[in-house]
Length: 259
Image (cartoon, rainbow, N blue to C red; front, side, top):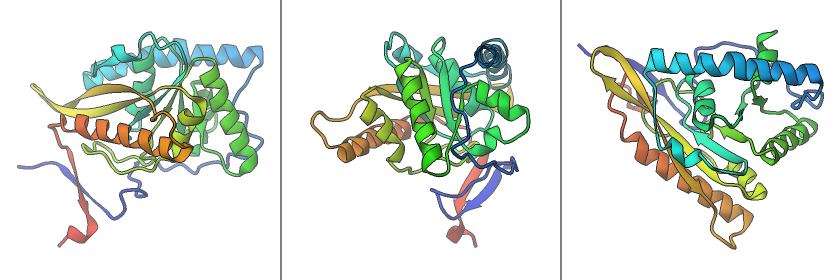
């Protein structure tokens, strides 16, 4: 008997299927993306290195038997860089980038909901959450934070699909907007593709993550053309890797196909 869950969708770019129901706060010009006090720096180190990193490692290995392929491509990168991945699991998507880039610290661009829960939101910010801004003043701070972290030779992870589709085994179309950051900062781009593969003694899939890159825009290309070229390189690599998924636990069907 087929026990897979079925989800009907209408819009691949905008439909959201996250099970979390959090009222997001407004990220305006008063939001602090970079907290430089001695106390803030200590709490950031504590949450990221002492709590989050070992917890993420144990969770991925024990629950999902997580495996990476191609992680060595990230080793030895002496500059900051951008990581682009598919958005298919709320918890794993917060853990996997830090495992891939270790020991380099990773900052993750996320929705405002990730920093909207009292106290937990502060911890998320300390662990590297960069919530999407609202308004020009907030955007300037957001962009300054990204520029700073790349300048510090850190990694910034972005989920260009934007919305979570749990356990989706394909790659949804996404725009090239976020690829303007690496173009302007002239740093390499890598992508990672989480795939769901069958396990021998469990119905729960194993997550295998493939890393590809580095990708650079064509020399002499305009900013717009460079952005589009990077997007296409990442999208094509992710689509190719997604073919390795062989365990479908959730089936997504476009609404007009429903009888």
